[in-house]
Length: 461
Image 1 (cartoon, rainbow, N blue to C red):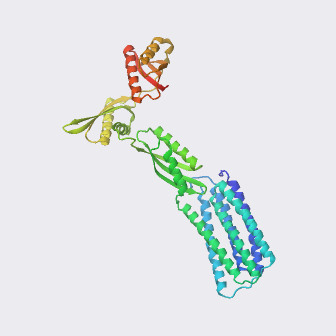
Image 2: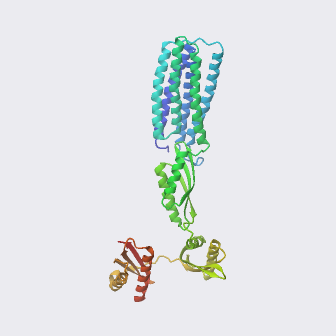
Image 3: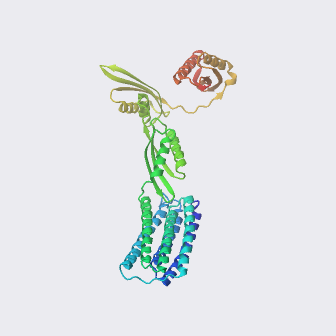
C-alpha cells in the first residue's frame, strides 16, 4: 500500500528528471563546441541535477512505503537521505569547477567561442528551469515532500546560474577574457550556498533535530487540551513528510484509567488541529490537583492491588500530647467472594499505603466491602403510586427544590430502589444540593422502611 498523494510526487519528479537529461546533453554539446568553462560548470551542474532528481524520485518512491516490521516509523527519512546525498554531490562539483576557474584566472586562459546558439540555449534553459521550479515548489507544498523541496531548491539555483552564464558568455563574445572564469566562480558560489542550506536541513532531520515551530505549537495544543494540568515534555522529530510526536502530560492523580484515556484522546485531537497528520503518542502522568488530604487518601488507597473503588473517605485532625494526629476512615470495594482473612489482609495493605502517603502520625481504619454485581429487577413505578407521591411530597418540602418531575421505582431481590429527578436554581451551591439530597433520602427511609437505594438527581432550572 502506497501513501496517498505519493503517485503525483513521483510523476512530477520523473518529469523533471527527463527534462534535465535533455538539457544536460545539449549543454555538454555546446561546451564541446565553445570550450567555455562557464558552460562546463552549468553542464556539470545539470549533470548533477540528473543524479539529484534521480535520488528525489527514488526517495519519494521509498518514502511512500508504509511502516513494516523492520521500519516501525515508516520510510520517510529516505527523502532526507536523498537530499543529503545531493548535498555531497553539490559540494564535489563546487570544488572541481572552482579549482578549474582559479587555475584559469592565474594562468593562460583557454580560447572560448561563443556562437549565437549557445546564448539561445541558455536563454531557453532559464525559461525551462523557472517552469520546473514552480511545478516542484507547488507539488512539494501540496504533498509536504522534503525531497521535492530539495529538488526545487537545486533547480532554483540553476535559474540564477544560467543567468550568470548568459552574462559571462555575452561579455566573452565581445572580448572580455576574464568573464568566463569569473562567471563560473559566481556559479559555483551560488551552488555552494545552496548545498550548505540543503545539507543543514537534511542533517537536522537525519539527526532527529526537533523542528522548532511544530514543537512549540504541539506543546501549546497539548497544554490546552481538556483535563490536562500541564504539558511536561514534548519530543518531535520529522521523517520525510511526517511528524512524530511523543507528548507527556499531567492530569489529576485520582483520574480513572478510562478518564486518562479520554484525556489522551483530547490531546491528540488538539494536536491534529495544529499539526495535521502527525503521529502522536500521549503519556499521561498523575499530578496532585490540590493539597487536600482526602484526594491523597483516595489516590493512595486506589493504588492498592485488588481495590476497585474507594469512597466515603473522611479525614479528621486532632491534637494529642501537643502533636497533630490524623484519623482517616474509608470504604474500599474489592471483588466479591474473598474470605474474611483475605479482606483483612487487603485492608492492611490499604492502610499501609495511606500511611506512607500522609506520614507516620496517622491512624487509618478501613471498611472492606464486596463490589456489587449487576442485579436484575423490574420497573414497579406504575403500581406504587403511593410511594411516588410520598417521594415527591418529601422532596418539595425542601426550600431549594423547585419541582420533582420524575420518579422511578424498581424492585430487585434486595428490595425497592428509587431515583428522583428534581430541579433547583442553577446557582445553587453544591454543598446545599448535597445536604438537601441527604435529608430527602433520610425522610423517605423513615416513612418507608422497605426502601433500599435512593438516588436524588438534581438538575438546574
